[in-house]
Structures are given as C-alpha cells and as structure tokens.
Amino acid sequence: MSSDFEAYEQDFGTATAEVTNKIGRIPKLSGEEKTQLVLNVDKQLEEVRELLEQMDLEVREIPIQSRAMYNSRLKSYKQEMEKLEKDFKRSRIAYSDEVRNELLGDDASSSENQRAHLLDNTEKLERSSRRLEAGYQIAVETEQVGQEVLANLHTDREKIQRARERLRETDANLGKSSRILTGMLRRIIQNRVLVFILGAIILLTIILAIYFNVRGH
Image 1: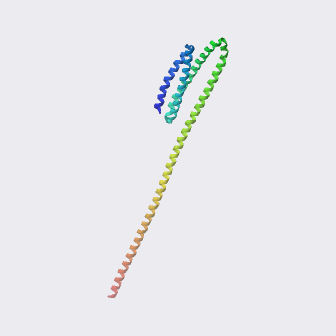
Image 2: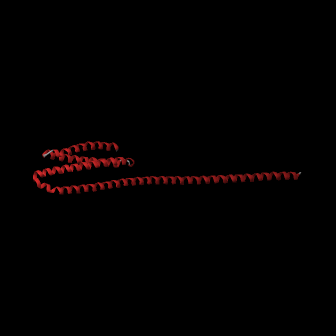
Image 3: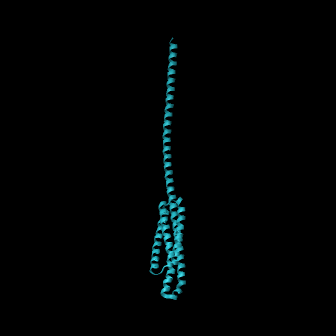
C-alpha cells in the first residue's frame, strides 16, 4: 500500500510542477494561446484532484500504527493543492479582467468588488468543505478503530469460552478419576477384611483342633 502511495506522490510532484509553471505563464500570454493554456491548466488541476483522492484512499488502507505519517504528508499535499487553485483563480480572474477590458473598456472595472466578494465566498465554502472532509475522515478512522476493538473482544470471548470448556472437561475427568479411586479403595478394604476373617477362621480351627486333640488323650 505504501509503495502505491509513493508512486502517487511522484505523479503529484510532477503534475504540480507543470501546473505551477503554466499558471505563471498565463499573465504573459494573450488571445487564443492564453485561452488554451487556461483550459489546459484547469484540466490538469482536475487530474491532480483525482491523484489526491487516490492517495486518500491508499492512506485509509494503511495500518493505523503507520497511518499518521502518511496523513501528515497527504495534508501538506492538499494545502499545496489549495495554493495552486488560489493562484490559478487569481490568474484566471486577471485573464477575465483583461478580456472584459478589451470588450467593455472602463465599464469592466465596476464589477471588481463583486468578483472579489464572490472569490471570498468561494474560499469560505472551500474551507467549510475541507472541515467537513476532515470530520468525515476522523469518523471513518474512529469507526475502523471501533471495529478492530469489537473484533478483539470477540476473539477474547471465544478464548474464554474455550478455556471454560476445557475446565469443564478437566472437572469431569477429575470426577471420573475420583470415583475410580474410591472404588479401588473400597475393594482393597473389602479384600483386607476378607483376609482378616479367613485368618481368624483358620486360627480358630487350629485352636479347636489342638484342644480336641489334647482332650482326647
């Protein structure tokens, strides 16, 4: 993912360098050549915007622990893009003024304040849009962190359940072993009692035999 981001960075650097050069040439040209250059710069700026969108998507795929660095780089590129757009607007307004002055003469200057006001409102809308985009990005990152936390909790729950199952099996085995040992101990005691009784009977038999033998004599 980071290699794709770096490739987009190189494309961004090349494209913005070309756009900067062309914006600087606009005030120096006139007529059809200037018109074509303005259209060309507008098209290139749209391509740069698409590059930034691709970079934004790549950053969202990067692991959270490495994402901060790429977010910082992306933010600087967006700021550079904003500067390019402002420079292009100033150049384009100057170009429009020149065209109007050629067509209308002094009457074109009366709308200068209106254009300045419109430009100011446009910049305010752009700032609001950027704040909304930043809020959306934070919300997306928060959602991703929440999903990872839920996944970790689910994994921990499964581990606890498996541990409980093993504990139940161990308890069952211990109970079974205890019953076996109790049965063996009971049989040992019974065998010893039988041996004791048999020994007592044999001893009593011997004593009686000796007694009757002595009495007969």
